[in-house]
Length: 216
Ligand SMILES: C[S@@+](CC[C@H](N)C(=O)[O-])C[C@H]1O[C@@H](n2cnc3c(N)ncnc32)[C@H](O)[C@@H]1O
Image (tube, rainbow, N blue to C red):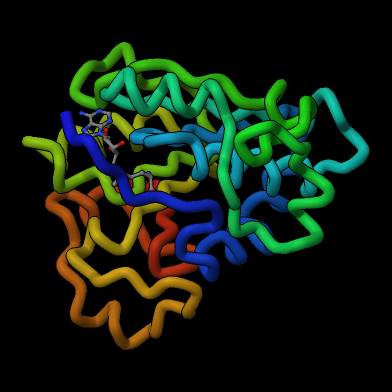
């Protein structure tokens, strides 16, 4: 198990803007709450980012706005995610004020967000880790840790609801991190897709967001 981890709130901001502007509002028009799965959640920043956007996308439905499941192979990261204490989350002043409360070692998400998020230990190589049905699978910056990325993508596809979306990270295409800057579209011409991706998914609202490919 690794002793360090790279993750952040709103990592790859333009991808989160696409989820916020297009993907989550479309899902919020259906009666059922949207389920987001942060698969390989690390210390929880990604899962709480999703919870913030879900809560903001259904402001009138405090109980039914959605759920976030965070799973990770490493129990140490899951314990940190469950604790949910962050030193200095880079979420912007407005969201810091609205969605976090003081804690002796930093801040933690407010109760409404905490009640939306559940963390569990789970290995992506094991079928029982995959929840069902999921609106958005965040499978970001984890594929190259795995022996058989194509098998994981197949399982991720089968746990998505029909209008669901898969989200990958820059490193899944062997792209460098661009903190705080939009992903330039032409950079994606150079990307290396993980095995199996383009047989199972089509690019959707953003170069890192994919819709399950329909039979043609
Ligand atoms: C680089 S972090 C990515 C964190 C977050 N998804 C992000 O993009 O900011 C990769 C995470 O994948 C987890 N991981 C590695 N292999 C895994 C597996 N087989 N099942 C579940 N999680 C795994 C690691 O423990 C680590 O927390």
